Amino acid sequence: MIKAIVSHAQGARWAPLSVQPSQNPSLIVNVKTRFQTHLGFGGAITESAAYTAMEGRSEADFKAVVANYFGDDGLRYNLTRIHMNSSDFSLGNYTYVHYGDTTLQSFNIEREEQYVLPFLREALNHQPELKTLISPWSPPAWMKTNHYMNHGGSLKEEFYPLWAAYFVKFIQSLQAKGIQPWGVSVQNEPAAKQTWDSCLYTPEQEYTFVKYHLGPALKNAFKDTIKLLVWDHNRDIIMERVAPILQDPALKGVVWGTAFHWYGEEAFGNVKAVHDRFPDFHLLFTEGCIEGGPRPGSWETGERYARNIIGDFNAFNEGFIDWNLILNEQGGPNHVGNYCDAPILWDRPKQTLIFNSSYYVIGHFSRHIQPGATRVALEGTLPEGVSATTYQNPNRDCVVVFLNVTTTSHTLTIQLPSQSVNVTLLEKSVTTLYEDEN
Image 1 (cartoon, rainbow, N blue to C red):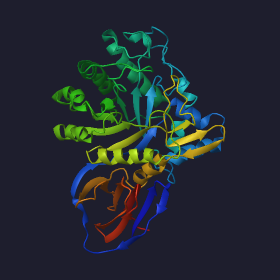
Image 2 (cartoon, helix red, strand yellow):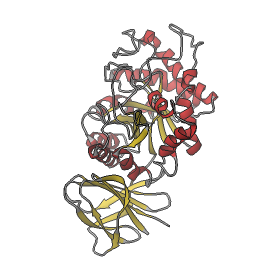
Image 3 (tube, helix red, strand yellow):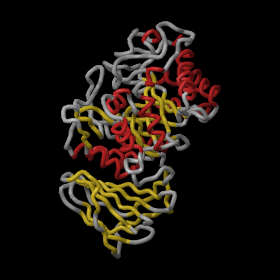
Image 4 (cartoon, rainbow, N blue to C red):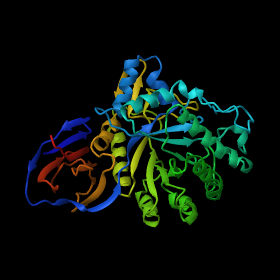
């Protein structure tokens, strides 16, 4: 049976949409033309997100927030991202060692037991195979050239081996608590000098750190069980940043792939160019959000998510990790005032959850495209202003997600493997067409 759901500017939930059998399709799902395998969807468990979900709330309310993302009735997330040391979406700057401890004997991650790890464990209750990516925003201040965790600065070369050992310590500390991380990125946004936790790497510095320090340290400690991702920043200069690393044959078995964000240009062609030049490496979207504070009630935020997910998936991206899972009505807490939006907001004065259009738009993809699905071809010409991405799940059922950014509805006839149907894409909408065994 073929079904459809729609979210649109006048109603951002998942509403059923009628489909009718038809003939003479203008679009054909061709499952013989196959592209990348899908890894999954997820969002970041920052200290701010975990604090917002937990502080002053009952156990049942906290668990409900987690279920909205990781539960079967929610977005069915199977990926997440956590920060090593603090990020801007923490309650303040912090590290896991005492000042100047070059032995790492003082290393202790107990701070994370207050918020981040309880949230992560509850997510694991829903998704035992949850893949957790670790990203640092800054080393301890005393390891850096500017002596601050904030305002950029670089890792001092003398501390390259120690910082690599710090990664190992953090992973081992999580493993000791029964949590098996999936991977690490070298540095969050290594080309951005921020007023918050940040650390700059030139292409040469990242290459040197990966090849001679972090890569060998991870291999020695964990063999091939921890994936290593480079860049973790925007699409606009992605090629010039990853090429020095990915073109080195010695790093082919060391680096898993490239992490990237959506801030700046929506340069999907740059993502595809990395795949085309380095097809043996993977691509993973690891951060995106609506900057500048919350936009409750806005359709444009959800539309931005759909546009970027479709654009990146069609450029060989393998998964999508959103930024903060939940924030308060101000778009925080954020220890430097860098407020942002999130798919779910907690309105403290009204004591209620706000589900933004982005939440429902992500669900058009995450609830229907399963981990292990394969992107397949959609043949034919879409109307101007309409984009789509198409997958075949492991059970052979197909999913097509359409975005219509125009103020005109479009009726399309599409041939799926099982049947040809008409589907009407409402104006300013996201529509998911899927095969359902039930």
